[in-house]
Length: 306
Image (cartoon, rainbow, N blue to C red; front, side):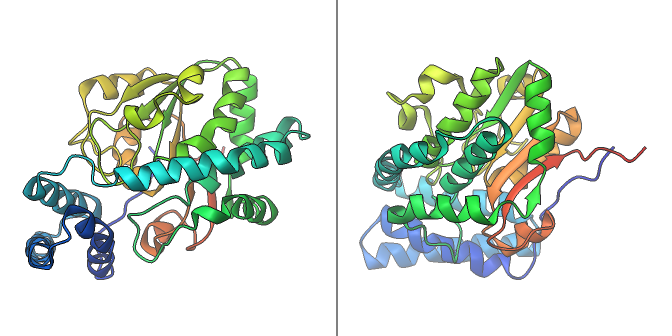
């Protein structure tokens, strides 16, 4: 069995988690006294998490869930998600024109670059400030620089030499619009795609409502993880989701939160999985052998040497 990707708690996780709340808390309330109260709750839970040595993903989830409950919030990122979707829809036609002349593996790489461009639309990673006006330029940069971890040829070979059920773990609203070229490419290869969204709004992660009326609905079967959490933690996902994983021949997983949470499920099933992301958190980057700012197409489990 291959070694599982793990992202343990380290000192740097504390300022990162608290810094990310500078986006959430003002969305919950504009009242300074209430904001101070929310931060006090977060600091208390953070301290408890370090005492119990809780890993960063479940610790962050616990803090966010408690603040949502305290504020009675359903989808505080709704306006951010709308603006992100609008920006992606604006950028997509220009990107499509750039990739239209390409064929075969070169087209596939360009579709991957487009999907990674979407992963820049992240409002819950400290130290990362997405520029929604530069998505086309970001795509150009990614296509030029390439992938620091590059298992794209293995994914290409898998997709073009076999058929089956593909589970696509979606990430953020807006980002998913830039997954469309990759979804089209995979569908044209006659794979059946199940597109996994969140069961309930959490940060700017995509839900069914966020993709309603988009082309995505025509390309895939849509299901949700059952989770109210960052990523797809085993503790929070539904049995229906786990059943979909077990019946999948291939998984494509977008974003950092899925890198933190899906490996526990992936190791149990050993389903071939490709993690596609822009590395934004130095700690998560290190866990997968990348650096902050790297573009990543990572296969797990790795093929064993014979």
